[in-house]
Image 1 (spheres, one colour):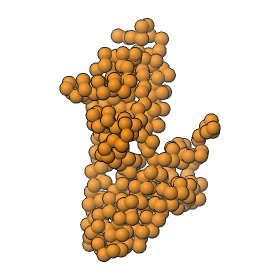
Image 2: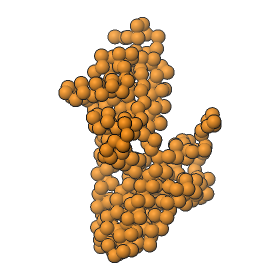
Image 3: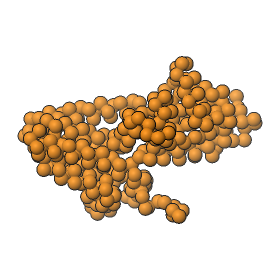
Image 4: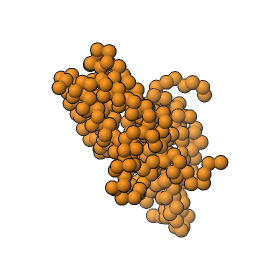
Length: 148
Length: 153
């Protein structure tokens, strides 16, 4: 039986993912300016933790809970974990391609993939819009129907 | 500084600016429906089991599991239903109805379709609906609780 009020188990403070998106944007912008494949790989690892282990273990989420949240007011709004967690998975795919591009001597591939991840992170940070989440339906739509 | 990366950063910032502008302009805004597609849309929605004849205004919401604003949209509609019993809300899982999703041109979630009692498509919107537009649409088409015959002119 699921709990009567599934309020905390799979929900997060909405400000957490927004904060994480700002940090991600800063990291990816700095990685682009320096052409650092290692930094993109590090961001890929951060995405991987959030996507695979869950947002409560996501490094920027931990940073938010420990350093930022105590300085802000109480939680005003919570959201389900699934959408931002899925977005981390989409971010992971782009960051892996970006890091692989840079580290294998294809800086254009690295820059394009990293740039796309940056657009998604910045849009999320600035407006709350989740590009990764929207891609879910886009991908499912594009694939031919598996079974009726 | 890496020139390729700096170029990519510039393009990324420009794309983000365009995206933000587009979202401000379009996200959640109700668009009207033109005649030809309107009838097709109603037929597709009725095939999904939507019965516009049962309510003054039927809002059909396409959602996915990975959709932040879907839950807030659902909550907002439930809240409106409390004072407007003539408002019906149908939630459709987009991924289990991909055929309809393609036919209706649903690209994002939540996408909402607004049908009047006659089954006419009044409009559609994508993204969390704008509160003022949604309220105006509901007030225009749905009588408040307690009104006679559920209709008020």
